[in-house]
Length: 330
Image (spheres, rainbow, N blue to C red):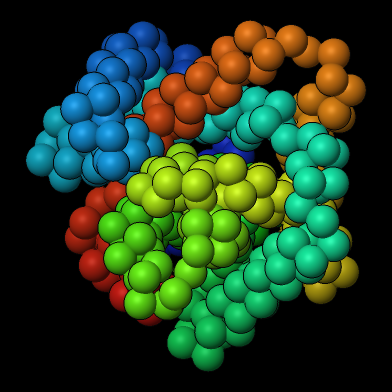
């Protein structure tokens, strides 16, 4: 329902709501995705080139920044919209599926009961605490849900997995992506500086990084700055990622009970199809049948697809909208 002072919202083809400040989602039939995909490929290459020159700078961070700069200085021409939309939606979902191949039951066994307790406690406190803070600060429910998911699990990939369930708009996704990128990038710089004052040995520091940093790439970049911390950090981090599917499914069930379909015209999916693919990939990886070269190739492809998707998502970060809508979330 709208008042006389409010413009009506419209829905994208994905079913998400969008305020008038959002650019309309282009229909693929109207323009070719090729120009946009070529631009995304170029920006992705630049992101990995910057990472090669400055290893401490994560390619995902560079990708988001490139996309945001492009849209805010007027380089995101309408002819590119279809391609960047494909990248930000389909590539990100493929990246989430491939992320499952980096996981397996062995990670959980290596973690042990105490490590598993740390992971479950961290995810639970971060997710519920962020949502409670969002409610207290007046952050829209969909936005606080996306921010909470991104911070508690694995950054942009988790935001993508929860997007359909949350039912928010483009601004909600843009704010969540911007915040996980900002805070995860700050962690790369700040956490290693805090290790010695806190008296953490490499293993303890790795556990801290794995339990707290958002994106997998950001976790690797942070832990890699302290010799001996990387293995522990990756094991703890990937154990957090395992909780992505149950968190999405549990949230969908809760929202279905709270919001009947008759009241909204739609119900959040119990498990988006690509999240089911993520679970299937975990199951395949757990069999041990895939050779190491295949797993390594899948990991590289996942990183490239994620960076490309983040270029597309970066084009949704309009600074005037972010200034107007992102303050409470920050």
